[in-house]
Amino acid sequence: MDRNAWNERYRAADLVWGTEPNRFVAEALGEREPAGRALDLACGEGRNAIWLARRGWQVTAVDLSDVAIERARKLAAAEGVEAEWVCADLTSYVPTQEAFALVVISYLQVPEDARRTVLSRAASALAPEGGLFMIGHARRNLTEGVGGPRDPAVLWEPDEIRAELEGAGFRVERCEEVIRPVDQQGELREAIDVLVEASRPSG
Image 1: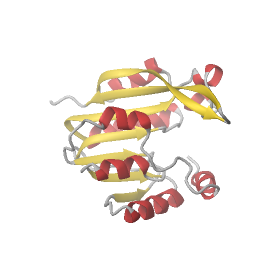
Image 2: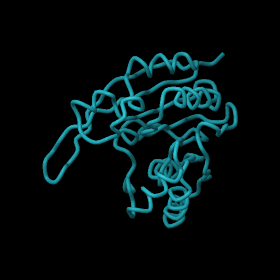
Image 3: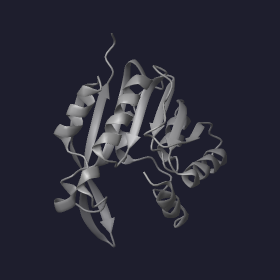
Image 4: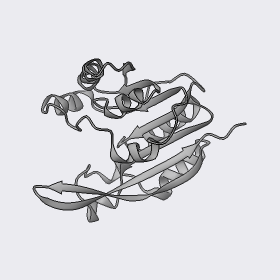
């Protein structure tokens, strides 16, 4: 995970991802009643974290890029929203155990060993029956979709993700490819993502 590369990417645009929450995050969590603390891993410029905080969650948001975290702080302040913003490498960040009712991971595209580390710590961070929501670029997107990383090693395959989650102790309710329409210069194309809903069983 290259902090300098991500900082340069964020410096190159006013808002890389915009201010609205990811469409799948909003669809999956929009009807869920706030239930205490939420952890947003790989939060970027804070769009999902701010949305969750606005809905009543007590949010801790973590990202590698200090440029993104500073931008997220300013966006949250401008909206009168409070959250805890943490600049940290997710492969070394250790969240408080059993402290969160919800963990969100949005487009964390890292190699398998790093992803397994993050998922293991996400499982430990969840309270029993806490929920995990993940969305990421699918490996099939390389050949059949549009956008996203070009390195297959960081892309998601549903069966692999399911196995990693079950290995980390999650109960997987949903792990499947979803289609995301993308407007490219007036032409509507389709990106392929992997969406995950899981939870940490009690006991």
